[in-house]
Amino acid sequence: MTVEAIIHAVQQGGGSGGLGELKLELHASTASHVGSGEMSGREAVATFRIRQGTTERAGVDTAGFSDAVSALEKEAEDTRVELFHFKAPGKVFTVFAVGERVLGCIRVSRQDG
Image (cartoon, rainbow, N blue to C red; front, top):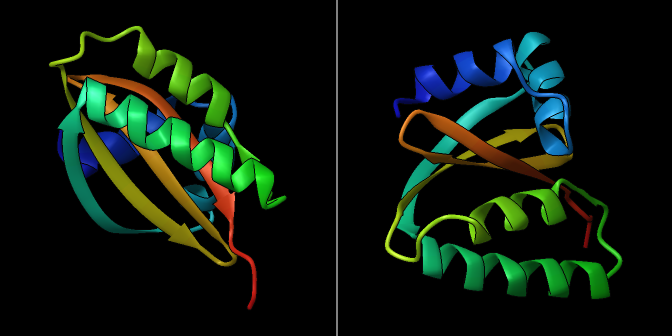
C-alpha cells in the first residue's frame, strides 16, 4: 500500500485502539508520516510481542497493542507485512497493512527522559 492509501484507509475507517486516535490526529493535521518498512508475518509477531511486553513492564501508555498483535498472529508466517510510522505531539503510531487491508495500529505515548 502507498502512504496515501494508508492515510485514506485510516481516515475512512478506524476507531479501535490506536486507529481512532490516529484518525483524529490526521484530521487535525497534527500527525505526519515519518517512515515505512516491511517484515514477514513471523518477524512482526515476534518483534511486537517483545515490544508489547517491554512497554507494558515500563508502564508506558499504549493503545491497540493486543488487537494489532492478535491480527498479526492470524496471518501466515511468510506474509509481507507493511509498517507505516506516524508521529504526533507526544505520540507515535505504527500501522500494519497486508495487501490492501489495514490490520491494526499501535499508539505509544512518548515519555520524557
